[in-house]
Length: 71
Length: 499
Image (cartoon, rainbow over all chains, first blue to last red; front, side, top):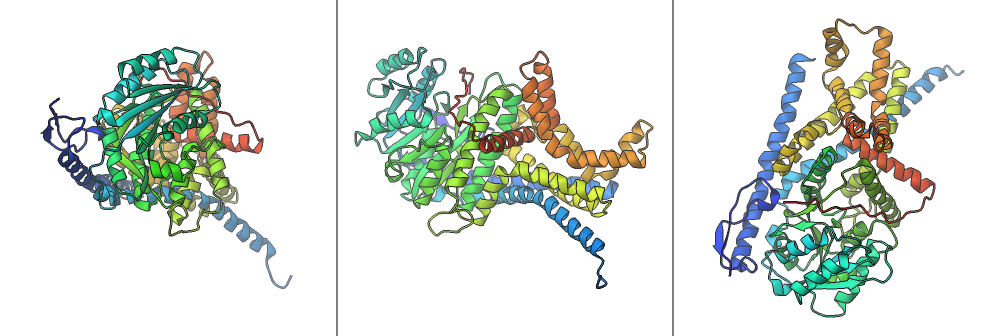
């Protein structure tokens, strides 16, 4: 038996949005843990929206600079 | 004659023709924009709602030819997966290796009895698909296997990756699942960093979009998980007639009405080529394989079907935009140059519309993609900033800020462009993009000379990594036109992958 805690957060996709919690055997963590991980990963996908907004903002900033100083 | 000014009509017709040529350059830009604008919708249109806890018995088939340097570590990582050990079997198919691959695999088989198996082909060198089929045939002799994982010998699976893939197979509509192949070399150089960025854009970015659009172009060769039912439905074997067996497997799965899911949070680390020459050989094989796929499935393109999404307009545009990108680049530049030579005012206008759109799309793509794997992007910031190529960025700057390049920059040196100089510079800017492929081609040519270690990276940074890929695609046109032999060319791996 091995005791392992998986935490959310981090910057690599592999470490993103794992459910916080402790399981007795990480090789077979049980349905509850896996379902929590699925739910956590599903919620993580909502971060795609603010990321898109940030990318839009970068493009918008360039267009504003162009309109203000180069047209 | 009849009061018609045939000269004027001819010039107008020529202008329209040249405008159409310029317009071809807009197709890949629009295609990329649509694909990346689809990504945020993955927040609501994804497969997680239909995923469920599911840990099937997985047979892992690993093709191996002279993989002694990497196969031991790969097996160890597989045995360390966060997955029930009794539900894992690893079949290493040794493709008549001449190095210590058999010894390494046999030692692991002794260490993990019942989990690791060594299969050996007497005759090797026929290609990955043949090697895989040897292992698949052995696996199918028993009923044990519920899911089949196909991988490469050198890749490293993150501990949670297989569990994150199998959960999608709980949905009986799913035939296959793929993971995010992430560049994982320990000793990264400029090229592997470019490849890492490319993989971010093509996988956690573009394949999320393909999840949304309802059709996947290709299961990653290093990480494709199939249900037993799907494997049997596609014939119980991998296609051996082309160099694009992964894409053909992906298409055959979807043509039979089964879904292919890309799982962005299952990460598999891979070692990618560290030299332009090795990358060229690898991608030329892929590009020529795509020619086969395009031809073989000619009856599905742009023909929507209730069974699969491969015939949708959006998928067709994405597929052909990538495949025909070099053609679009060349035609677009010919159109711009033609309009310039006609002294048409449309030249500057269309150039600005096309390149401002391209620049805005490109910046959006890079800004978005960088956030999807921020750790890898941060370590590759130089390649991120120069991804389109420094000279191509100057072309974008000229479109975005016309006075900056034509007036302010020369002014910094006390210069002012003459009319002839301005014309020559404009012409050079219009035709640079196809010529950037020549720069990429030259990078490969000089790589093995004494100047290569310095000149090749300089040429790639100047010409752009995208231009390198386009040059390879263009080379595939030439090879296909010449009916050059299409042979399996293994990419050398040295075991540089790390977490």
